[in-house]
Length: 288
Image 1 (cartoon, one colour):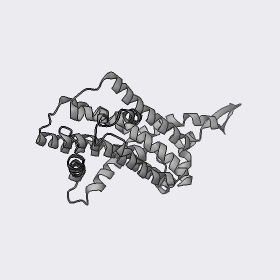
Image 2 (tube, helix red, strand yellow):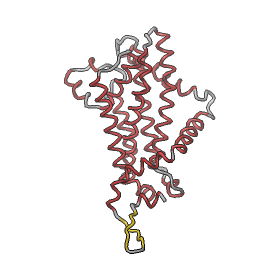
Image 3 (cartoon, rainbow, N blue to C red):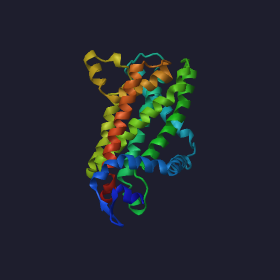
Image 4 (spheres, rainbow, N blue to C red):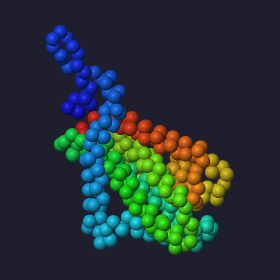
């Protein structure tokens, strides 16, 4: 059984009898075991994603169209406020805002959903065996579908205001996958901490709100003083949002250096979150 594997049962030959012994050192294999189990339960992850997408919109009058109208409504409000009140003069500003907004919305919603289902889903984890990472992966999968649908209003806005459409938008799924890996890593890391300190989950919502404003969603970095630009470059979401925006808005293929940095950020955060999460996942059902 997988439960025994996760407890690292080893078999040691002694004469004609095989005796199981427990070795805590086997826990070093937990990241690989969890990955294998997540793959074995991939059909379940698919159904979880389908359930989330269906359940979210089946009682809505607009249905799945709300996924596209929600960022569009936010874009209209933010564009009016920042272009008219704060006099931000960026060419094709509505499309500029929307291109960054849908990337950020995916990150904030997907990571928060992963955290919520892992921290508050202890009752289900106690009843049946399901690899705990499956819940987080399904949350990210649902977010990726919403992100893909959000490209539709972005394209509409770009056509309406006359922003050129570029073939580089076909590479957007690569940036989306990197955003998904980063979001999954953050979700796994914060949820693991949140199991021990529940207040961290509530604090995360506040952090995300502040994080939004130090990420160039509503402005470009060159509008800021030079000393602030250097500090904001330390924000990993700056790199990932700009990668996505370069492909869907500017129509530019990022340099090899930018690709490598983006891949390093996404994979690095994912690995940190995965290692921390799998190292403590056995305790989730007993602490939630």
